[in-house]
Each structure stands twice: as structure tokens, then as C-alpha cells.
Image (cartoon, rainbow, N blue to C red; front, top):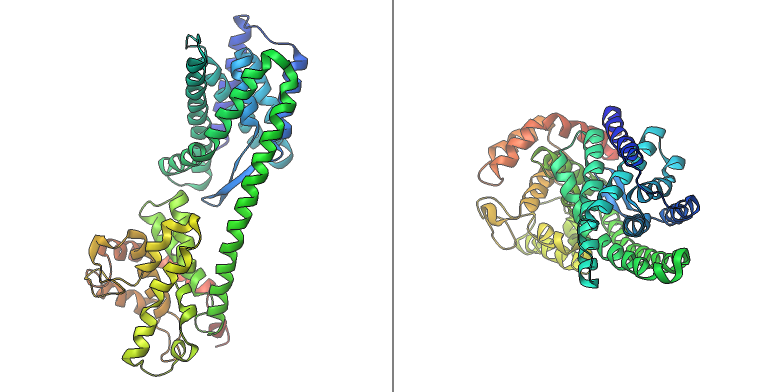
Amino acid sequence: MKFYIAIITIISGALICALLFFHEPVDPWWIIILWGLSGWFADAFPIEVRKINGNIWMIGLSMTFNLSAAVIFSPISAMLISMVAGLPALEKNKWYKSIFNVAQISIATFAAAYVYRLFPVNSEIVKIFAILIAIGVYAIINNTFVAGAVSLATKKRFGGILKDVLIDFFGLSIFISLAISYLAIYLYPYVHFYVIFIILGPLLAIRFVINLYRKFLNTKLEAMYALTKALEEKDPYTAGHGERVSLYCEVIAEKIGIYGKRLDDLKIAAQLHDIGKIGVRDIVLNKPARLTDTEYDEIKRHPVDGARIISEIPSLERIVPWVRYHHERWNGTGYPDGKKGKDIPLEARIIGICDVYDALTTKRSYRDEFTHDEAVKMIVSGSGKDFDPELVTALIESKDRFNEIRVAKAPLYMSEK
């Protein structure tokens, strides 16, 4: 990791030395410092997108200042501005991480400045196109360096992490950066450095609106988590079921190469997969005897009801079918729709096998729990019938990790034995 950071830092330093050697013009220092400090201030209010492989992914607002600097000022000036704007990391991270942040952003800013100058900017349309391409170059270099660092730190696949961070960038940041960067570039010849105060307003307003919307969505999600937890707490045997299933799903997902946002969504779906049981009567949920056909039909409605509840949050639309189909079986004997094989979404198949493992290894009102080895043996016997054979193989290869989670997150009644 430190060697990787050293390489990025050396590249950044070499670029600055080369530009100075070839007498690249440097803009007045007061402009560089003022513009950089404005980016520094903007970066003090980043937008939290989500967590990636356990790391919080933030979009810094200084990017707008870096990109506009790449067009307005000389390449070396733009690099120096981006380095000043990257200084907030010194307050938050270890020194070598701060150096990495400053170095990689300066390289990305230089590349954006260089690419922009390759275009014969003779019209506003060409200018917008050139800025757009420059943003793309900035994004690819910046996110490639970041993905490399996350991959080295977490020992997870680089390709999946890079794809994930690029989706975040182009899904949100590119529109903000293009619009406000162009505004700064357009106004600069008329108002000069006063443009800083003009663009800070929209940047901070956008941050406020995005964070407000994110808090609104998080509030609804937290309410669902609370409902699920309340449902589980009714029965001491199922307490913590959603959390354990989520952890088991994470193990299998990483085993088969699912990372990033897709993994985050899978973990949310696993946490909420039984939320539809809120509509099932307690007398049915906790019945110690065999269920009647009518009672079983009531239980079988919970995937559909859960999918309907989750569909009320637009940002969770992707996970709706994963919740609906987590009780489908590989041979088509499951419910609610009798889907079979790969017609069942992969994520629903993962939740399904992890759900069964946790159900087998925890006590129920009508039976005692099975041991870890017994549960694995029963799941293996259902390979190709109840479960996707590939997922059964992944579970077998990860069975020690499953057992660790089972012990660490065991319901309270187990610790009382």
C-alpha cells in the first residue's frame, strides 16, 4: 500500500518538476492560493454517497474548482490549486493517505488540463464538449487511483471496485461538475476571482438538497430495520436473524465475486427479507405445532408483502425481486411464483440458501437447532433441488466462516445454555 502511494507521489512530483523545467507559466500565487482555499472550503462539506467494501465513499465539492482551474489557468497552476484543495485530508487521515490524496488529485487535474488543450476551442459547443471530455479523464484517473488503494487495503478485486466508484461518479458528480465548472469558466473573464463566491453558493445548496434527500431515504430505511428488529424480538429464537443472514450473504457474495453497490444492496435485502411477516399473526409465527394449510398459506404471503413494503422506497427498487423470490427453489417447488433455476435472481438465491442455514442452526418453537455440520449436510443434500449447486459449493468452501458468524452472532438463548 505505501509503495503504491509512493509511486503516485513520485509521478505527481515528476510532473511538476517537468513543467517547471520547460518553463510552464505559473499564474500569480495569490490566485492559486485563493482558488485552492476555496476548493479546500468546499471539500469541507463533501457528499456522502455510501459505503464501498466498508469504506465510506465521499464526493468532494472541490472537484468543481479543480476542473475549472484546469481550463482557466495553466496546467501547473491547476495542479497546485488541486493540491491546496486536497489539504483537508491532513486533518482526517494518516499522513501517507493525505499525501496520496493530494498527489492523485493533482495528476488527475493535470490530465484534465492537458486533454482540454488538445481541442481547438473555437465555439461554445466545442468548449462544452472539451470540458466534458476533461471531466471524464479526471474521473477515470482519480477513481482508478482510489480504486487501486481500496483494493490494496481490502484485498478485494480491483475491477469491481473501479466499476462501482465510476458508476457513482457519473451518476451524480458529472452533472454537478459540468454545469458549475462551465458557469465558473464562462463568468471568469467578466468577474475574475469573484466568481468563487458565485459558484460556492450553488455548490453548497446542491450539497444541502442531496443530503436532505439522503436523510429522508435513510429515515425510511431505518424505520424498516426497526420494524424487522421488532418482529424478530417477538421470538427469542429468531432474534438477530436478519443480521446473520446479511453476514452469511456477504460471505457467499464475495466468494463468487459480488462487490460494491450490488453487495451493499444485497445486504440490505437480506436484512429486510422477512419484513413481510409483519402481516402474519403471532399465533401463526410462533405456533409450536404443525401449521394447517391455511396457516401455511398465510406464512407464504410474506415474500410478496415484503416486496410490496420495500417498493415504497424508490432507491430500493432493485432489491424488490430479491425479497419476493427468496423462497423460490432451484427445481421450481418454492413460492410465491414457482420460479426455477436461473429465472430466480442470483441475489434471491443467495438470500434463500443463507436463510435456510440460519433457520436450521437456530432453535424454533417446534424443534431444537441443528448443529453447523448437520445444517451444511442438509443443504448439500438439497443441491440441485432446493439450492443452486454453485452456491452450495460456495457455502461449503466458506463453511468455517459461516460457523464463526453463527457462534459470534448466536441468539441469547444459546449463551444461556
